[in-house]
Image 1 (tube, rainbow, N blue to C red):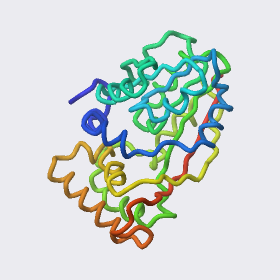
Image 2: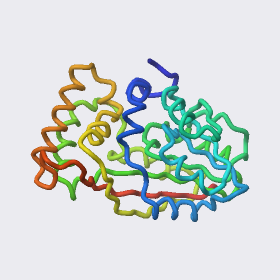
Image 3: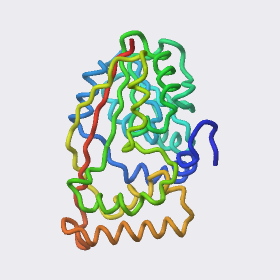
Image 4: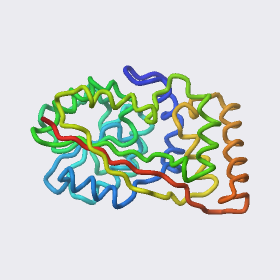
Length: 259
């Protein structure tokens, strides 16, 4: 599968792994979401863009604010999953470099787990176009906390050889667009510790929903699955008998105002 302007790993991997993404990916911690809502002034009467909304992990948590949400997502399977779970939310096909919304039509824009996929300068021009003056853009990231988890640390080492040219949040290359733009104020960050309660199958789904892993041939994905289960067994804090356990994350909320 190819989608114009979308990296092949995202187009193929997320089309294949939408169900695993919905099952295995963590939500976002309540305190981080509450902070984001306050910073962006998300409330009834406001129109909020959730760009690259995926299966709606963040969209679902913003729905109780009463704001009018529009979820834009390029991958069909992800849009279908989002619409099935949130039938009252407006869901639109599109990408960050060509947002299918009118000028100055948005009061706040959010991007969860996705800005590293974008052509940063082009995306910031589009966010600036659709946001009303003085409104803000926010990024939300659940980052695997390798320092607090032997499982995460060993898993990162095991799967990185499969990455190829797939963009990574950890590379920080995506941040250069914010450093160089005069369309937005400086990007600010607040971090929250978070532990995702999951199961062995949930952990497998989390890993298999990684774009470049989901895009692998079936036999290689089966090998990755076996590696995940082995690393869980070998982890002294989890082991083969644990039915449910916590995996640590750091959740970063980043935001900047439109100039």
